[in-house]
Image (cartoon, rainbow, N blue to C red; front, side, top):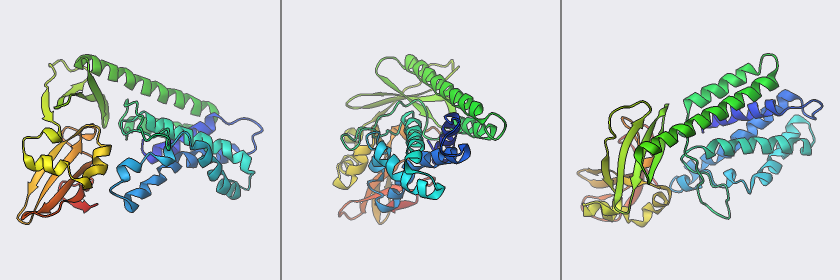
Length: 313
């Protein structure tokens, strides 16, 4: 879930849980919950500090359920000073905001390391794309509704509506899985809750198909090999490079994106099929390049929203 929607969902949780006689004024408490709900995404700074490891570190320490009490206690320190309130009165709202963030990320496909540092396993329900404009609009409308009369009731109703929307997406996912048959995964697509990518994975590769609610045409399956099973030796060699280890750890459905051969160097790019969308650039494309005459491979990534600009890792 995007950071703004996280923050606004925190505001809704703060308004819905307010009670008479609370130590913090209702609006200040709601804003504190919203700020805490945005905090875990501070790990986006790792994109600048450690771009090669960002994919594995994002949604790690700051997104841990085990570390949530620690983060809440730490966030309450500056919050208490800023709001001229007692520390203990700020811990609860901070914990609520952090919990809202974890819930919002858990429904996506990226994966959230809830048990960090005991485990780096990425938990993911996979019922919503990372940015869901429909949920974002619903949350935003709910925040506007809290500016009118009865903000507590408006916030609570909005959260119920969000939960119902997520449940609806879970039902759509089950329909997509039923259409694919046993052993398939259903991956949500951006911008439409009714579109899903179906993936059947085995040791050799993947079978992919696009499913949309109401579509009458039979599923059209296509096969994609795993990188280590590609026919071209260059691709297999590139995939095995140690400098590509961070991307291999991240990609749950790795596949070849393309091979670029230039006058001065050769590049082999890979993608994670969880973030492959018909008619759009895949989100994460990492690869390796080396001089055309040979030499050491170097790791790169293709920039977001660009199919040619690359960044050294």
